[in-house]
Length: 449
Image (tube, helix red, strand yellow):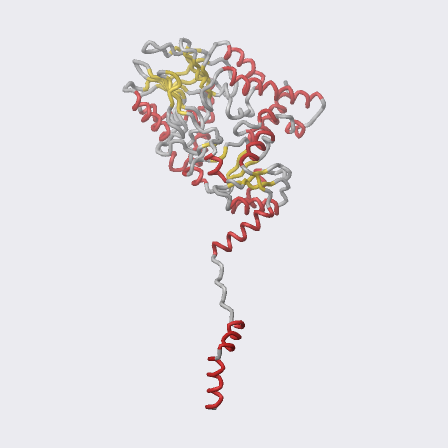
């Protein structure tokens, strides 16, 4: 045994033996980290999924406005990190919810889809998921949101004033006339129901507010901003119609000492449907519905009401029911400015309700344009001019009615009406939600005209 041990020692000590052993014994490779494994998976997915860069996405949105752009980030990321890409057809669907929500958002699997996130880590995986679900025209935006934003391309902020219940703080349109421009998206918890314009006129004797806001806290936030700009009290709050975002904040303004003004049809609509609107708002707003209660208007008018004060000529006008019951606008004839309410749209597609009369809306438009306004504050979207709102309101209504008339004349069905050409208007915000329903409602109405 001793001799055998000596032989082993000699063998291990020999240079040749050492070389032979080094040829046999290999170092154990270091296991890849989880980050490395994830990157490897991502690299493989990027090879399988069609990619589009920034220039390509700009061109696609221009030439194919029907493209659905899907942001797979958390809603909180959109709110905190600068918003989202401005696209005509947009959806925010978390990557983990795609399988469950995509069919409601994009029922046609041949629809062009572009998926993105912040830096193209989650979006390639989401795009591959959609491809596996049978969607045939899916691309990943490989540059990601932050490069889109750095390039100065259009974005939509989910909350332009995170320190306030207001979606955006008031901007001065002309001296003495201000408007807090709401989100063009539907009212949500995140935007506190501020998805319409809340305007006000400051005079030497008091303030006139147009729209009470969606809830008590939103109205209070608007009043806080008014107080920063004047010591004058709010004397009147004019409701543009009876929709919740126009009138549910009225009880705050009554507590503040203002009189609520509404057209007679608006007052009737609030009496009949106000509690339904309140219940819907409470379900959406949850804790933000604090202290909001339904109240009725103090002043009801029919066609015209003079609220002139402090040397400012201020007229409240009802030119006829167009978009909603008792549509109201505020006209400043000496300044050629009209706060048009929902008679005029331009950045978002106008919604047509079951009781909207589009033929009458076009008739009302002629009276509206005859005012001679040079500045228009619409119900939604930034201040603009009459030519712009004519293009995206009156001309859209005329176009849609003409296309639907062709379907009816040819003996077509409701399904045919849904398919009428609205391509010139699909770049408008909310077009994805409204174009199809608008065509259907016009068809059902025109069948009996």
